[in-house]
Length: 74
Image (cartoon, rainbow, N blue to C red; front, side, top):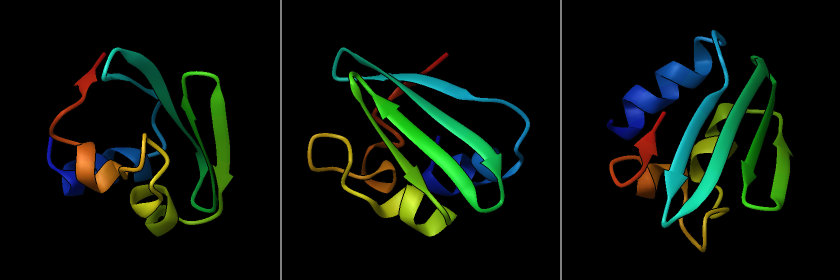
């Protein structure tokens, strides 16, 4: 999935997005247009805009923009 496709999936607010990256489970929880949470292993972080969700280097020093084509989505 490209980073733009992932961004659109998150913004659809339809469901939580589960994935695995480098053997660690992750979760993207879009609550509203300005309330998101990322979880990766034992770490979690809240965000207020999609640009920060996509660009924060939350995943071992990489962002969702960086890893979107490397992750396995469930």
